[in-house]
Amino acid sequence: MVGSEIQLAEARDAERPGTERDCDTKGSILLLDRMKEILYISAGELSNYTSSHFWNTQESYLQSEDQDSVASEISFCETMDTQGRSTLCPRLLLFDRKSNFGSLSRSSALGANAGEPDPSISSLWSGESEEHRQGVIKKSDYHARLEEQGQSDEDHRSSKEVGDIRYWSDFNRLYHLPRSLQQLPDIPDWETTSLAWDQGQEQFTRFNEESELMESDLRLMVEECDHLQGIQLMNDTDTFGAFMGTFLLSFRDEYSKLPSFAFPLMSGASSPNFGGHDAKRTRCILNEALYLRTLNEYSSMNIPIEHPTIWPAAVWETPLNFRSDSVFHQSALLSAHIETCTLPFRLNRDHRDMAVLSAQMKWHATSPFAELQGIFPFATSLDFNERLYNLSSNFAPMASHVTRGFSPSLVEDYTKWTVQNLQSSLHYHISVHSFAYPLADTFPPLEHIGRGPAGELSQSVTSESLGLPMVQSYSSLSSSVNTAKVLERYASFVDDCVKRRGSITTSGEITLDDLKDLVNDLWTMHDNCPAAGGDEGSPE
Image 1 (tube, helix red, strand yellow):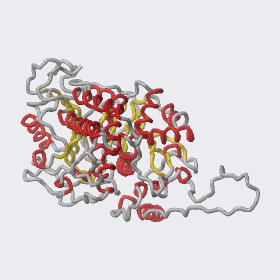
Image 2 (tube, rainbow, N blue to C red):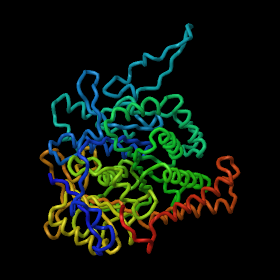
Image 3 (tube, one colour):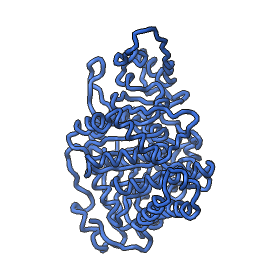
Image 4 (spheres, helix red, strand yellow):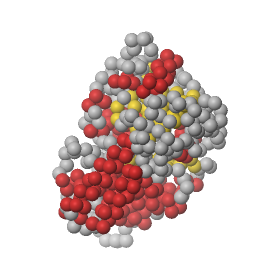
């Protein structure tokens, strides 16, 4: 396994003030050795599908004895299962509608029998009663296969097919603590899952009062940490924007200085290709605009992700060949990039702190927003120019790049590419070269990965320490003018709502004055973003 290396790459203008001054070690950054845990939060269907892939990847690292690999203590907490055996469980809060959990529930956490009656349920009625219980959801094909392999002592990693996927829990490989599973009541069929902003706020307030989430499950997870690094948050903005926005507000009342790294998964409503009717589209965009304003105020760094259905068609083509309409495939690709760009938070060696990276991403401007782009899987050096997708930028004051599994020749090609294509516009960027991305047995199969014209390694290889195929990948976080363009799109849309005084302003969901305040706040957020030709200050 290739060791991890963090390098500070200077801009072409080496004499720019501050560029070299902030690098005390002439090319590497000294970081704290003490362990810093992360509390993960996921809410919504797409987010939880992505989270399942993410945690299956984390589980694969547990098989490695390589000290340059990932520190399990950052993401996992140790507990005891029902047989008294030590078990590692994700330090995670999962929010979703009860019906989306599938066979996973609080009673099935850590191997408990979900079919047994809950002993806490009692009845005050002493007369005759007729009980109606929802049928137990059948185990997924994948979990049934794991049990068969466990009974026959067969290597569970030999499984090549996940089988039919009905829920995001169908391909989950880990035990969860009961307090990790936060089940919200299902919404009646006749109501939309996209709630108005005030309804989402009320939903969190009611859920918190009934479950004592903030004072029990959340507080217990925080207090179990020795040195909490921060929270990594991912949620669907359409269905959980207002809910998580209210959560953040409550969270900041108690933990005002704890860093947060958020990945809001957008609905795609702001795209011209959105298929919803006008009322639904307006509600979605307003919810996202309100949530972005909340993140701007209460979250340290935020990377909005456009919905996979509006990504370029080339993203899904060879060598990936994923189905763009499959949430299982969408979330696998999304997870690979989120896991890669946040990998420095979890590295054993050359660990990079969440607070440090958040501050460096904002050194050029006050905006707590960035964008994600990358290449997965990475095949040859030609991919830098042909397969780099998502929000690329001609002007990026700061960027954090993570490459995985690159051979020395590919690292050299990467360096040349950054000089030719990035450093004329980059003031400050960080490169992390680490081990290849492991493909858990639940990851959709990849096709047509071979060797590049120069003979560089571009096919999947099997890691001796993990026993898994691994592929090269590249992911990048950057702060750029593109973020301002996104905020401009939302500000213009809300401003148009004010001018049209559409039905949304008279439905009781949001007042006209509130819309005007939102427009002003969005334009302020826009002005705080990096802009082409802006001030070329130095990182602090």
